[in-house]
Length: 157
Length: 385
Image (cartoon, rainbow over all chains, first blue to last red; front, side):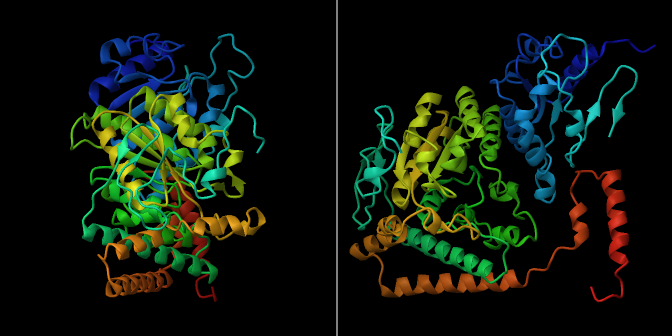
């Protein structure tokens, strides 16, 4: 019988497995290190994989996605955490105009293998601008794939 | 600009021809060689070239200007959609472009045609972008120059991340270490992305050189609309060295860029270089600079032309003769003619290529769209168009 996990614990296990399997995988974001992320998704990963692979970044979302693009071009596979869904907008140009279009613009010569993980839903108490359901707009950029993890089903597109 | 006691005037005396004391210059506008010049970082800069190397720098400058003029002409004749001329910025681009070592990586804006040329990229590549054939088809992995970036400042973060990757790969600390050069303009320094790139580079001690071509204008807005202090001084607040160089002096630009890149590859972290230059032409072919700047200002900068001073120098040194100048002019002419012929011969891309490479491994949604569009195109079979 399969082990039952919360989504948070499953994500943590998935990230751990990715870090174990591929030395090029990096986890980066705000508070993902010692704290283990504000939702504890990266709990314990920095302790086991070090500060070079589980990276506490400066506090700027565009910087997280933009530098991850450069790391991906260099051959790394960054997994970025955006702390709250409502905080993703400062990174919007980097997501919509940069990462999503590089493969097309370079006629396939530049590959940008990276993951952007954004929490949504849940039941934590937050202000009106912290959760803002950007996933509808997130789905509009072409050339990126968006997955939504949910308790009952996983919808992909 | 209001002159308060907090902000130094940004231009003023420099425009009038007196370089600031912190301005690295090794070749004056009159072609006089300066042996050594101290930068704002306290470092003494100098450069030694052979006679042949001086001649080759002159050749680069002349050929690049000629190719650029050809591209402007092609746009005026309707053969390019738009063109962003580098006129006036040749020395900044050749000096920095030639300072790169083979293992270094460059992240350009959309005006670095001279840097591309120095990296051995066929000059037709940027023209195919401006003609709408493709998005610039050179291979960034082969030439170590990333794609042109139009969104102002966005590439500074990509360059920073790439430089962080160099560190992770252990490719810093020796003469064979790698470094990144990131190009941007004076206007870009107001962008959040550029400031974030400065922060990331500083915090992660990335092997990167931020090369700002301050050409005095962000389209119509003069530098005073972007800053109250000289741009190179911004680096102080981020925790790495910054310096200003005469961007119309190919020797000084080469010297400071080579030193900054070597510092980066040896593990000494980022540097900000402000190449102080002037955009002699329009922002792009869609722009009309007579609406926002006066002719006398352009004339002042004409006197500081980056090519004339190298010519004056090699003439005074008697290391180039009339036959050499004629040969360079002829090469520039032939290269530009060749460029023109190839631009006119460029085939239009097939409409269905629009769907190529959207996703690395294809996509059912895009495949379905391609199929529908192919059917639509087929419906014109046999008609005039």
